[in-house]
Length: 425
Image 1 (spheres, helix red, strand yellow):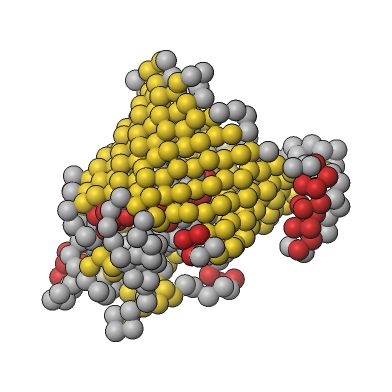
Image 2 (cartoon, rainbow, N blue to C red):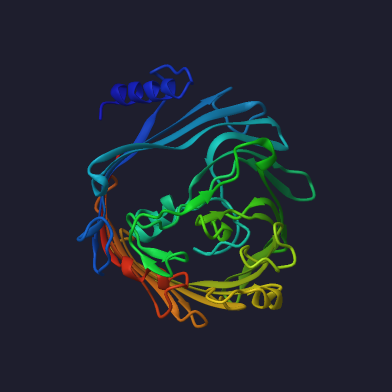
């Protein structure tokens, strides 16, 4: 694509978003991608043969000012990233997602700030999130889109402070829920129908109104302790999944109010890298756990280990422990016919990654397995960077489970094999 044409496209996009921009001075990058996911299990979703077929154009750019030095006092940048898609699964539906559009600046040497739409993340887990309570897109995850699309953007203000006694991140954001299976593309367990359904959901999801009192706040303090990084976390906002029920008769689910407290430690361990992370989720709408319609408070503990074995071979393992608190209250207040959830959950993961052909070929296998839920999820993949511009990827999503109500068991009819080809410019 001609450089001048790319700059004009970006200038038009920024203008449409309400930000005046000149055609010159905005270097434009991005990619064009085709994604195709072939179904290898039966369900009754909209398409019989595939659950992913789309074309995607991503454009991104950054404009630096004040001496073109982002780290200089009073320096700053404007960052843009947006995706245009044509979704053949829904009959060629076109869409645009603004993934990033923020202003970042450093008013002081000890402070960085970022205002606008941005991707937020922290914590130590690999595909497992305890203190990272920022929004995720699990439809993208189970379809086989690039891992970039697991993280959803947030409209937020992020401020990073660097005092002598550590580092502090503060985030204030508008509520954004996780994107989860809802029937039209991926089947899921519907508690009101009592089983896995592939019919577009009629559930009424009651999101908190967009108002100042419903803003979410996240805080992280982190510093090095010897060779280890220690972090403390606090979150006040809402559950990102609609796991609580407002009205059974009207099939209304809502996002409970949530406080989360946690810590993590990551550093060298046994010739590799180890990590441990802890989180306590306090259910503010049902502190005692006596309301059977509202998810109880939770305790989560994660331990992980990864090691480079040489010859471009890496392995990683994780163990996640979850406990539903006030379980006696939960059990005693169940009604006849209610689905029964266990007090404890154990989840193991394993990742193996091997690089070949001068690190242009990546072969990976990620496995989830829960001995308590008797379910799991395998994610094999291989990618090949044909050149600096061209990359192809082949993989599969293979969830399974004995019980329809568990996290991966409810997804077992969504197995697919996907293919992606990308041209970057």
